[in-house]
Amino acid sequence: MAEFESWSREQLIEHIAALEVKKNKGKQVAHTNDVSPDKQERMFKFNSYAQRKIALKFCYHGWDYNGLAFQVTPTPLPTVEGVLFDALCRARLIDRDAGFEGCDWSRCGRTDRGVSSAGQVIALKVRCSLRPKVSKEASLNEEEDVQKEEEKEGQEQGQKEKEKEQEQGKREGQGQEPPIEILYTQVLNRILPPTIRIIAWAPVREDFSARFHCRYRHYKYFFESLLPPARPLDIPRMQEAAARLVGEHDFRHFCKLDGSKQIERYERRVTSATISEVVPSRSGSEKPLYVFDLIGSAFLWHQVRHIVAILFLVGQGFEEVDIIDALLNANASHPNPDPSVPFLERRPLYDMVEGLPLVLWECGFDEKDVKWRTDDYDGEEVVVPSLMPSTIQLRESMESALAASRIKTSLLEHFLQTAAEHHPTPAVGADKVVRVHAGGGRIRHFNKYEPLLKRKRGPTVTDVNETWKNGRGPMVAARRAAKISAAGRMEEEEGPE
View 1 (tube, rainbow, N blue to C red):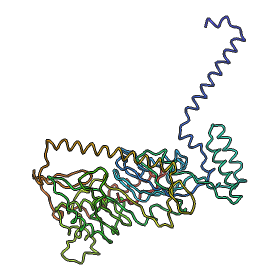
View 2: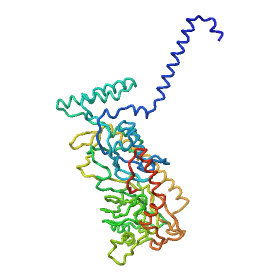
View 3: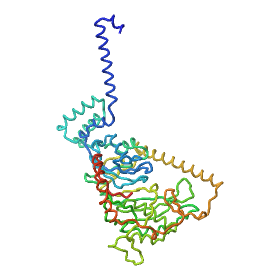
View 4: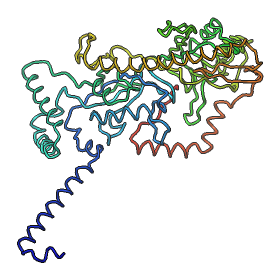
């Protein structure tokens, strides 16, 4: 304090004023740094821009995610919908505060943890740049407010969109074509991780639902035969068994029963069930790779994985092909007319296969409902593929992932070759252990195999539904509904995987 004693009154006032300026500058910097990305998104006025409903077609690596559907409770891994929703919000295509319900979100087919998709589809309303939402006279004041806010925050995005709308109005007044739509594929793929790729998009009508307008769903399950000492797979036997799945059947013994759904009808129609060898890959592997193709209008929870588990048992010779007929003979009101086929009111206990090789391959829609396109063109004519930057970037990222996977596969093959120099291949049944194919490189070991028809049986559909209703089910459902409502998420629908 001694140094200020000799100062004059004017010098003290000048020094205090300088300190005040420095203090105010610090507050401004701190205030700027405190603005979070979420707050900046909320500052963006979505009601100032037009919206349109679109469908997005995308693929994802299931092993990196805790399933497709967004979960209201914490999960060990992120969900595909959660990551996709965040990307859409970051791109300012949807409003985070409005949630899933606010953008009319719908999905085609739900997949569980570990299950991938090559052609999943969702539908939602997003921001677009094709036309202004309101007339110029009605929106003049609002546009001025938006412009002032953007100038204050130093943001140029809103001004650019406004200029696009004004330019479009001029073109429409002159009878010219409107400008191209937002490059949805390119914008989202720049934000999303490489494990999720947007492949195409399509404009759809307002009442379109990715779930209810889907005409068929195509699943693929990839597998290899087991090496000794396990029993190999008899592919012709599996093909014969798969053919018996075609048609409308009661699949209650080929799925996981869920009392919370209160499902009473388990009839589903399968239009195609085939097994074929995959075209040999460039890796040069001598071990053939097969694929089970299953096509139908809708599926039950874990239906595909339960079917494949039975096909593996047939292929390894543990069960006869006729086991398919017995498991399908589950509805007392529509029994199998063949008296030699046993009626099974309860399902024999057995495990489903792993989810890693399962892929939701395609979601089929009528052409009048969905016409897929890329960022190349946004009109009614046929889209001719071209090498736009979005196409090049998409292929480059997917080819890079494939190259890394091939290198890992090659390394593992060389490791096995090195081990074979010291550990020769054993004969089938060399150690008397029963090995059951579980898919995805997994094998289940047993001392003795017990045929399905001699195993313990699970509860009936009625038992499962009643247990849920008379137990803690309603209370759990109420809590979950409250969480879903708070998160702005639609109710979960019945899902196959």
